[in-house]
Image 1 (spheres, rainbow, N blue to C red):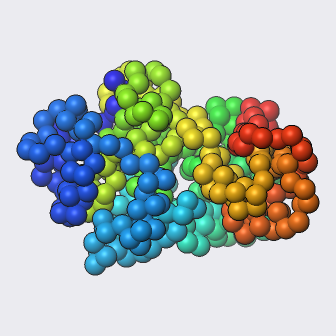
Image 2 (spheres, rainbow, N blue to C red; image 1 turned 30 degrees about the horizontal axis):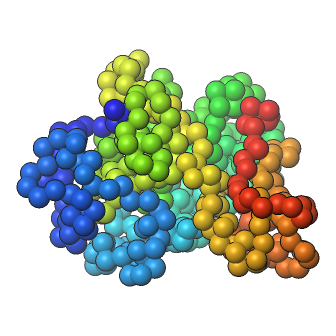
Length: 385
Ligand SMILES: [Zn+2]
């Protein structure tokens, strides 16, 4: 069975650590047995919660389905899905300061934070993390890469938080006028080839991690570049759909428990595909690690940091009375979205798509015989750069 994390800590959390009685009631409804929880099998009686279910529960009882005490919520965010995200405490909820610390961010850094501050928790996650370590933050958010390069040059920024593609684009503009020395990347896979290029061509040491809008930090790279789960996380790898445990070394869906008694994220199915290994690591950790994130279990795609979930795309097609396939490709160093559809007239499809997803549909091709809907990810990261 593939799970990573401290089982003893998990069991103690389940028995004594859940502070909100509504969460306990909810877990009982989802199969949690009465009496002490004493094994991984007991824990597995809880049915994993998909983001689809979470979104529906929230719509029925907004904003947090009655599972988060509003008195302790300091911020409310909205992710595509739609899913409302609560922030319940500085630092201890998102915990990314631990990840930035491993990537050697410190009080001497000026951090250019390219994650969005606008209704998305990502900007805040890295802002508070850099602040915790005493670094100065440039709260930039997403912008044009040329403009970002200009700000980095003028401010003498030394560190970057954002996505891999955006960092590449900025560095191309910067050339040798940069003082950037380190970067922390999430939301998009950085290959080892990418990492080498960042270091050799641009002098930037890049680390990557894995996290979500609900729980914050899940796993981050150590000195050996292995992604170890954070100590507050219990990470299972389960077969998508039936949620049976897969073996170590096999691909499955990351299902996360955040051991925070104020939050209901117990067996939250992320939809992200991963592989767990439990070999000892050169960094001294014997807790195991994940080998990265290998796509989405439900064929949803993440484009420019925004998820397009399959069910949302399905809704979009139904609203317009058409069938369609959404194709994501890489052109140059940019992700481009195309749609193939059996529409009769293009009408306002592009505008409607942008309105629903906040993403640009580059082109629509007609295929009168198209019957099957789907999302196709044709991006090949290795061909880039
Ligand atoms: Zn390690």
